[in-house]
Image (cartoon, rainbow, N blue to C red; front, side, top):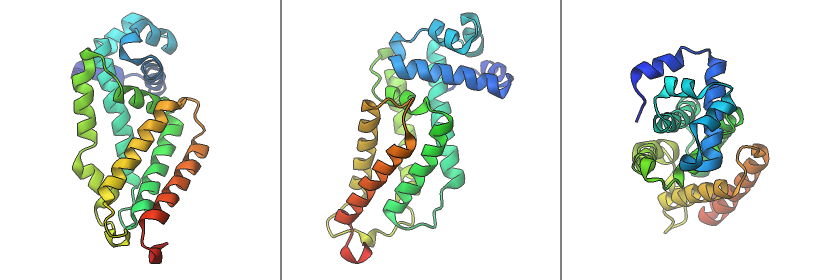
Length: 212
């Protein structure tokens, strides 16, 4: 899914701040307008560079789009891998911990959530196959197990409650919320507070009384 190595090298040779300007401009453009309606000219103008330079660094609009998909996911996964405390055994505490990590990432890259949300709902045939592969790759079982289930104390749940189904429900809720929100100007503190309230509501309903 990556762009050609020689193009990556040209882009990576840019100063970090210049890379960030281009990446954030592209994330914002795609996240706002979707793949088909976003033009390379839109991205170039927002980044303050020529259209030719975008092609110089990425080759095609599609290659840039795929690069941003990997960039966004890897930025989140790296922080989770580095900061996630697997000694926490409570399911809902684990979800809150991973969400706090994501919020810190998104504060520094506010265009990432709108971009990933746009990718999730993208229907353009030129990239649809790649987006499906992308989400299957980053929602793989081993990653979900590490975040939510590996070492988790499932005995706290009431009989008949499936933790994996609860995890899926939380995932659907998060995508649904992003789809209705202005994620670029989102107040992440307020959003996390609401999410935390939802977590405690679920915990109160799904856990055995002695664990509340």
